[in-house]
Image (cartoon, rainbow, N blue to C red; front, side, top):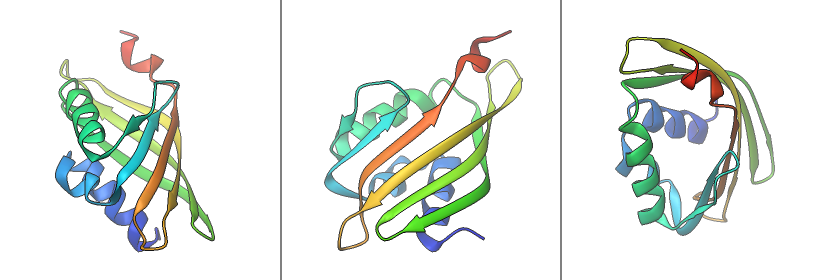
Length: 120
């Protein structure tokens, strides 16, 4: 059973609810997706997610494990991407995030290989 914050994070992501997701961040929080440059601030995170979601028909996270130590959380999941061509592609992923003293995310990192999405 995921923690409350983890459940809220992935509920927002899976619903492609960008406003709900960025509301979980500090105003100057950052998100790094794979080896891409970090997105800094809620507006940049929102723009990045909106552009990414436009390439998908949907997505779903199945959380396998969660570890929390202090303000740091590590989540292991299988992400199933629904693509516009009708394919559903499951990909393993790890997300690590840190929260500030108020419980908002100030650093969010996604470790994933999206190459299977491009394979036809």
